[in-house]
Image 1 (cartoon, rainbow, N blue to C red):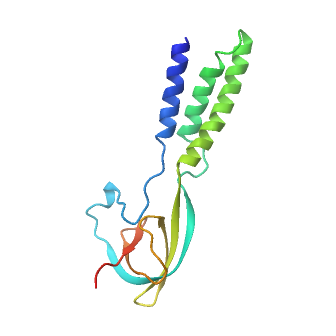
Image 2 (spheres, rainbow, N blue to C red):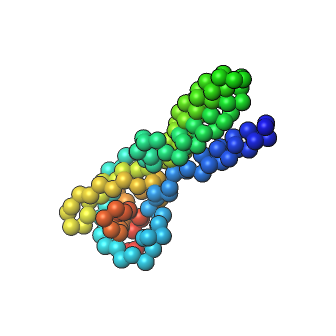
Image 3 (cartoon, rainbow, N blue to C red):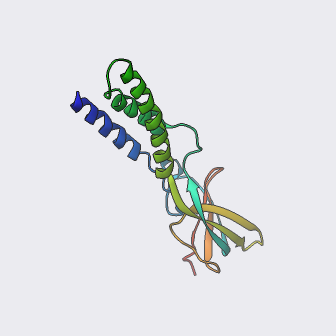
Length: 158
């Protein structure tokens, strides 16, 4: 019985830790974005602000569900009779809450919000992962790759 408990806990923890945040930097592409034609505009960074990117929207996800299941299994091993039901239920609540918080924290990452003055005179704001880091006054390329993904990268052309 203890062996099953340890296995359940390890499976729960490994599944929780696999819920890491996606990479959202200027050099990161999804499979869907590879080969996609993008519109590129040149500009200059006029402001930069650090931000925190939250990968989850606050709804109960896999972390909460797996944490609840793991907590229920572990909690039900404590006590006997109806007490096992109570400890199992309490374990499910505690594990679910802990799993949800862990999933939220694992899906967060640092990022940057950039305001870019385009060579055409427009000002655009783009939020992305922190890599690569750009500085105010730096020349950049704004790559608009579709309705849900734009990014900026250093303009290395002269």
